[in-house]
Image (tube, rainbow, N blue to C red; front, side, top):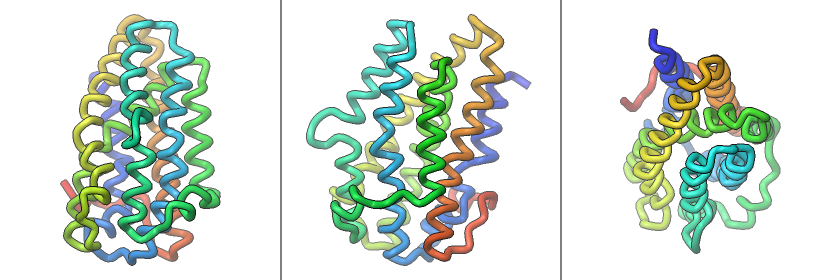
Length: 233
């Protein structure tokens, strides 16, 4: 097996679309309060994503790679429609106040996710941090498209403000993920010893994201299993 196929196999095995919370989202069986609770918890991860990027950028000694990461960072933070702001608009459309999202207390599983990503991003090996970012962004286009469909079909969230976060991620993260993949492939070609590290980091990142969803399910009393067949292809 080509070593990069191992990366993709891990992402497929631990795909967030296989988590029962996202399957319930797609099936339309979540309550509005489930969505707002999720919005509050997920904001804790989303609002920190640019800081994960910044940490990897800071640790990287390769100028060309830093320039690519800087462009990604600008997409996250630049202007009035930065990605954290767009998430807050979604949360409002789903029924959560901005203050309740910004000031939400992280549950233990969300904290585990945030700490895992922070540790990976600050790793002495910046490729480990970048691999974690890839594990996240490679899944976003498909997840975002599935969320849009579910929001429109089942939850009456169809405003431009409510959907823009997902519309942007369904497109721009395709480019981000492809750029990150090429960087990781180039680095592993120069140093084959990085391959195992990259696969391990991707696996840890996927586990962390699934753990966040587990916590949402636990607190909302939703029967969630981390491994189910995906409802959305």
